[in-house]
Length: 191
Image (cartoon, rainbow, N blue to C red; front, side):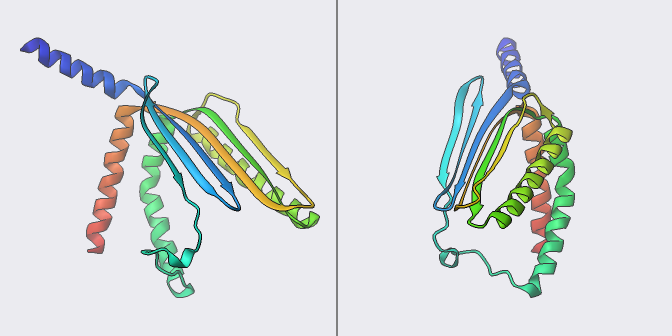
């Protein structure tokens, strides 16, 4: 009986110290937006979700309230407060995350050369900030592939984002439990 108990405890410890690998792909075009997420443990796929998130008509979706200028300031204040509460958990999870692949390609244009150049510069700035945060707060084990291809005479947009990260299962579960506590506390405050 003792051997079985020791084996179960050892198995749980091995699982908690194991690294899970999360692979994500997001594709955004003018016609279609989709994402794919795959979770693997020891190269065995545990979960795969592929979804088309294209919004045909935003007004027909149920459950989304209209945002107006009167409520926008209060909503923004609540969102900033929630981000402040979640920041330690995001920092903790990013500190223990290893980024193995990061590829973000964007191509597009507005049809006008001057506004395309301004938009391309803005996209470069956003990508630079994102890569800076990832480099500072996580463990980047690869060279990121970042590309912006402006098409000065065409009007279209395409962006793809591929990444592969790994983290220990125990640390991910700990962070998830803490985040759930924050959300349940927020729910009780609003009830």
